[in-house]
Image 1 (cartoon, one colour):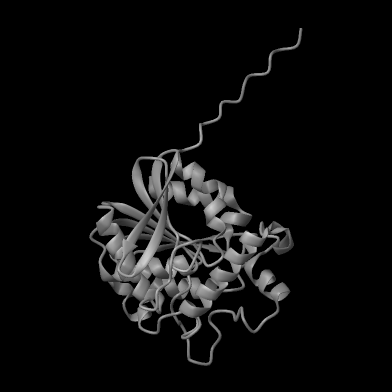
Image 2 (cartoon, one colour; image 1 turned 45 degrees about the horizontal axis):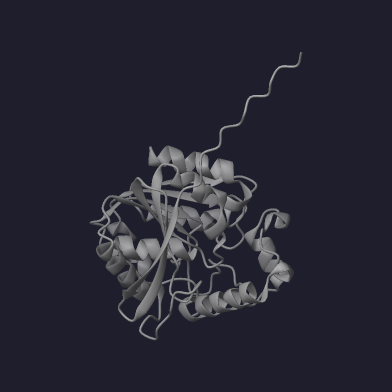
Amino acid sequence: MPAKKSAVRRSPKARTTRKTYNLQEAKVIVETKGSGKPILLLHSEDRYERSAAFVEELAQKHRVIMPMMPGYDGSTLPDSIRSIEDMSYLYLDLLDEMNLQDVTVIGFSVGGWLACEIATKNDARLKKLILVDSVGIKNRGAYDRDIQDIYYNTFAKVKKFKFHDVKKDPRVLTDMSDDEALDEAHAREATARLCWDPYFHNPSLRYRLNRIKIKTLLIWGANDGIVKTSYARGFAKKIKGSKLVTISKAGHFPHVEQPQEFMKHVKAFLR
């Protein structure tokens, strides 16, 4: 008689709540998933993190707080917010409004830039920092290409910059509904407004990274064509005591291409 197959026990999905906060002149939508020690997740300009499986995994033991950056996914972008640095003060207000303490911040790409702007200004509510293929600084001279130009190059070429294996890009533009396509258009407009000039960096930020005193981990895709590993090393050198790990066969979004390897490093750091 064949042995009975044991039932696979799955953890129930963490409960998700959604709330809008009125901060300065902006309306910021915040999704919260799970319970436990807080993790503030700052999404990238491409927002792959919003639907990533690792968020659910984190929410099994943590309270994952995911604000939609002004201009993205329903949060409003008033004229008073003209840069990622402006936005950092809005997020400091959000931390106060939610009365968060001992927060681990995980920032992806532009979200990593935002995390650094926050941490260099006031880290009183922060505990740890994870930067994933972050932009935000200029390492070399004015005419040296530190951050690949996503506006000059073709869509196909930019996709190759972002992914080691372009087939792993979960976003297929031709499969989008009209509402999804409109959200994508709004997000790209917001990215251009906030990050175009200066291009994906704050010229002053590099000189303030020494102010980051909390424990910091940088996670980088070894095949990132947007900001290469040499850029990551320059970033890490400016944050005293930080650690840099690279993930092979991954581009600008290692959490998309190599989610298990990505979570291995995140879990170890959280412990």
